[in-house]
Length: 532
Figure 1 (tube, rainbow, N blue to C red):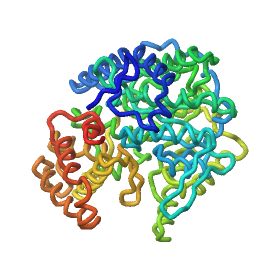
Figure 2: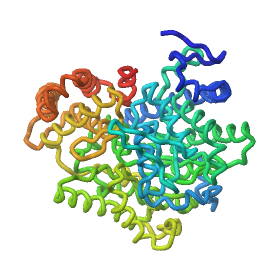
Figure 3: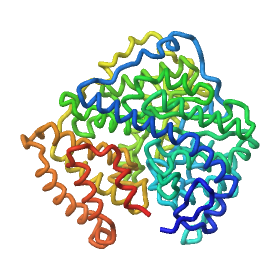
Figure 4: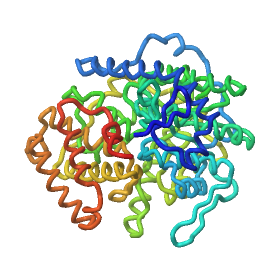
């Protein structure tokens, strides 16, 4: 691979075409280089600390609340503040940074669009660079798209507020090397979005807003705070110009929400219940604990005790500190079949009603077709208020570590296991083919679903669990089912689509990450080697 040395510090392995030259300007690369040089060593140390913590949990320790910052828990401090255009976030839509998606999402009946460089984007070099161009054009209001039939998509007046989700700390950007190692994808995404858009966003009364995924500790939040503060100082911006919403989607982080808010207090505006990744993290973190094995994915719903406790604790913690408490994702897709569609909308409304009743300030959807129904639920709950920050849940019984770790009731079924295999293989096949946001069986899936599916089976094999029909879950049973479900997928999709796709590679990766003795931390890490 040719090394295109543009900066003395960073080596780019991809040639610079017209797209790259728009985004990877000399000044942008200088800024990226400063961030990478200054913050990568500490990021690497934070990732090493994750490994140490996991080793302790694997050896029998259970996650718990921490005492090292007890002094801040009792003080009556608040976060720095929330900008006007982020105070009403009752419905947010999420999706990858693809051009047509960006336009449709910003035009939807929602308050916020979370443009995603993380779980719903397969981060090929081409898509990551194109995503930066798409967001730059969206911020300037010049974005348009014409499909093959000649239909033109353009922004309507008064589009949704834009928030950029960067990649997690663990994900590299393999096409850019610093001292011979891939740089953090998070810094690549942050640096380029900020550099090209901060000035234009501030000029129109908004700002550089970010979603931060996969955080596991307050130290990681403090790292981001340093990145943000350094950036503000470098560009002569007031402290607190950069604002972030942080996803509580890992089990370790749920025990440190006060500490996370404190560590990011100048920049944070809220926390979000990233519930699908949270379920994945529960499995992954407690993988060695046979008494914490989850049942079928379909029965792990927000009314389960450990998930309800998580939602309520997040709301109470956020609102006490003046921060927004965002609800989780509705992954359903509207259906053309009226009966099925009514069932979908009823499910979504019930889920969102629970969140609104609990005190969430807003929630997530993955499809514009759900916007009106979900907006109606929150409009009714909020009335003329912009949010529910005054819902403090002060009379709640304190939530214990035991509640947050409580095992989940439900069956392990053959049908559930087979469904997990089909969904995971189809998602992996799409992801390595360059598509990270995929409709599968009526749900808009991102990486979290595949992660839950494959880690569930891994854990069932590991702890020699049995299905409700009495079959022990073994590697052999999984391999047999995988072969059978590949034939089902071929039948469902048709031979031509199956043959043209990358299903053999997807099945191989699925088999490897489900049967290896050591659980692979994120399927996107080995998957990343399979995309350009």
